[in-house]
Image (cartoon, rainbow, N blue to C red; front, side, top):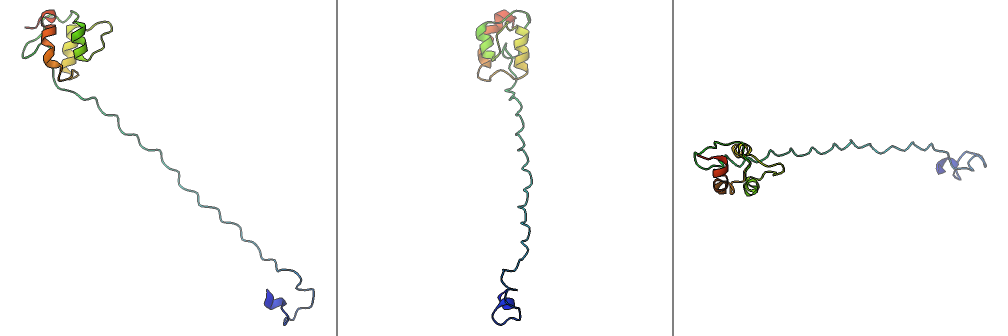
Length: 118
């Protein structure tokens, strides 16, 4: 600008009284970040199957699936005792591997007579 309107310029006085108007460039908008995807939840683990537990022990089986077992046996099975647990329910629970392994050897003494283990 000063070389146009400086002391050696060919412009007349008054022609260079203002600062030249240079267009202001439009501001560049900040880049829009890509949306952050929601984290993928970890898969729900499958319940751990302990292993087969024969509530009668060994190769014995029940002959009376209907009677209700004692509360102590129900607790060892890890079952909800509301409404009671029958011998048949206890056998199914053991076959499905839901009896804690450490409790399985304790069950025969509690269910043999009630469930007719033979």
